[in-house]
Each structure stands twice: as structure tokens, then as C-alpha cells.
Image (cartoon, rainbow, N blue to C red):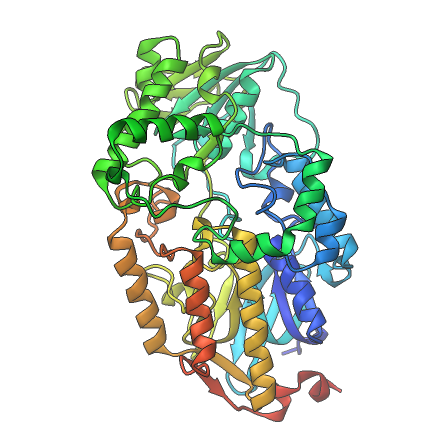
Length: 550
């Protein structure tokens, strides 16, 4: 048999992902003195914002939150134009950061990881990529993000559609002309709503196949003037410090005030103010909306009343009103005229609760109420969230154990950062941290900094490998389950709990205690001398892979 003569590259760390987590990891570990290779499936930096180019794509987190705090040069040199930035500006920001910090030279774009396999004897990861490369690395950091693996709906006949099929999560980079077309949209989460409200104001006929109505609140976006920019840049240090203490990981206000601690007229006044102010203000006016069902019901009724006031057709308004699950138990959406869109004559709601989708046909979509012919069908049906990216390629840890086997009942880890049985494999914004429930940029910076400190500790103590202890991992997962059991989030079918992917284990496996408590948990592991981790001294070759290669 011939020998595999593929050249093996040896580095200290492989980083996967070029979203905000991967970009910060690339900078941080380079500055730490590690020899790194970063890998990205897309053609450039930006992560989800590289792919999500659909009409109306916009972040529903404040721009001040959705930006890095680690580099004062970046903060001072970049200015946001809007309170909630649109996709082109976010992608421009990612490109600015990559240029300013010289990150691209470390990346291999248009490249996917095929496998990552741990060598027990040498304490080394062997990473194989789609371009045929074989890389040996002491560490791997998976910054694949919670939303990076799109999923199609489980509807028969999808491949038979003869029109133009578009996916929100992988929108073409070249312009798509929808003028005069009959356009169907499946999916009414955040992306679907943004597409619908944007296309509804354009010259095309829009057919919305609504399977589950979603709550949405007015965004009330604002432009940011020069005076505000000056104030913001002067106060960044205090703002970033406050974000790290906030349950959201951002600058959004939170409250310690229970809903029923105020009289009904005062509660109504606060909700009216929150509606007029816009954004996620609602989430910050009462403390118990995700634990008190009665309080949640009253807020949901308030929003349903607003829908009835906005949509002029009473029967149509009723179909748009979400029922059967708590408000904010699904990801809270922000809109710019979403409900108003349904007052337009070119926008049509097809209620798939009343008449479910039967199949996709060559000509369009058939429901129990009949067939709707379409020129274009847009799928805004989300992602195999939290775990999909990590399970999309082979990962094998100690003694050849597959990650797919470890996670067969759902993801397990310590802090969402590292796992028992998978030494030197780290995650940023992993599935058992706050992940999608807090500001992903703040989480990413926290996680990368924590990993860097562990690696520094290993260098000082001569350890070659680290993983979570099984006891610590079990304790962390028990805490996650205990917190989730007190939350109303479990009462909704959503990607937060895995219900959007057929056959996926379901449950709330993100940390629901807030970013501030998550940060404290991370700090506690370090403060107790990393006793929750298991270290392996290993060989000199594993401790110094560069020297061994030479």
C-alpha cells in the first residue's frame, strides 16, 4: 500500500469561524504568541452577516452592543450610522476590523473542516480540511457560532419546485430581481419578518405562508448624529464595563420590578411607553415576564391589542395574533412596519394553522386550502442552531469517542467552553453558555479571554492537555436544567429548544441565568485554581509542537 504523502502542517492552534468570535480568537491568540491557522467556509469575514444578504437584513441588537470592546483603536475609528445597523454596515464593520487588525493573513477562506481527531499518545489534534490540508495543532477553538448551519423545512416536494428557490441564510451575493414576481415566503421569525416587510413595500406580490405567528415589537430605529458619536466614544470604557455586569451582556436596561408590584394603570402606562420607545424596551420594564405566566399573559394581550389596532382587517388581525405560547418564549423580534405590511393589497397571508402546507409543487405551494402558484419561493426557516455546525463534521476525542455520541441526547459541556473527553478543544458562544440569550459579542470576548487564561496557566504549569472533569460538567448541566425548569421558555416550540429540526433532542440547554452570572461562573472556575478541569502533563513534543516539528 502507498503511503499518504500529504504534507502535514504543525501549529499551536486551529480556529474555526470568521464571525465575531472567530475574529477575536484569531487576534487574541496571535497576540498571545501562538502560531495559528484560522479556517472559514465563507469567502471572507463576517460570519452570519457574510451569508445573510436578504432584503431588509438588519441586526436587532443595538449597534453599541453588537461591536467589539477589546480594541480601543477600533472603537474610536469606527462610527455606526444607525442605532440598529443593517447587514451591509455590519459586514463593512467586520471588514474594517479585519483590515485594521490584519486578521485575513491567518485565514483560509472557502474552506471547511472535514474532521478533527485527537491523538491520545501525542496530545495533538489532526484537522483535515476541504482543500486537502492536514494540520496538526495542540489546540482547536470552535467559533462556529450558534446560527451557522441553515436548515430547510421538512416539507415534501421541495426539490420539485421549478421557480427560483432562495434561502434567507444563504442569499446570493449578486442582486436578485423580484420586481413583478409572485414571491412566497415560508418562515415568520426574525429573518422572515424582515423579508416580508421589505418586499411588501416593493413592486412584487407577496404570499406569506404563516405556520406559527410570531410576536414582534416596533424597532423604532434612529440615525446616530456626530454629537452622539463623540459622547459614545468618550464613554466606551464605562459602557463596556456596564455591559459585562448586565444579564443581557449589553447596554439594554433591565429591571428588578415584578409586574404585579405596580397598579394596573401604571403597568399600562409603562407598556405604552415601551411600545413607543421601541427596541427591546419591553424586556427591561418588568423582572418576571419569563417566570410569571399571569404577568406574561397580560403583556401578550397588550401586544395582541396593538396588532388589532394596526391591521385594518379584523379577521386578518386575528390570524396574525400569536397564541398558545408565552410572549418572549420565542426569540423576540423587532420590526419596521411588519403588521402594517398586511394592510397593503400586494401582501397576502396564507394561514397554515387553518390549512397546513401539504407539499411544494413544481408551480408553488399546496396547502389544504389549495395551491398558490409562485415565481419565487423564499425559505426563512432558520438554522440547526447551537449544535448543527459542530456536528456537521467528524470530531473524535479521547479513545476515538465521537462528539456525535457524546451529544446524542443533546449538547453537554462545562460553561459551553470545554468538554470532558475532548482535550484542548474549546468553544466560543457554545451551546451550554448564554449563547443566543445574550449579546454574542460580549460572550465571545469573555470566552476567548477565559480560554487564553487557561492556555497561559498550562504554559506556566507545564501541562499539555486540559478538559472538563465529568463531575464539573455534570454539575454545570444540572444547573442549566434547574434554571430552565423555572422559565417559560420551555413552553414554546422554537429553535431555542431544538424543535425546528426533525429528530433533534429537545430541551432548553442554554444557560438562562443571564450573562452576568455566567461571567461569574467562568471567573469562579479560574479563582478555584481550575480544580474543575483535568490536566495532563504529556510529552515535551505535545507541550512544544513547533520545536518538535523542527
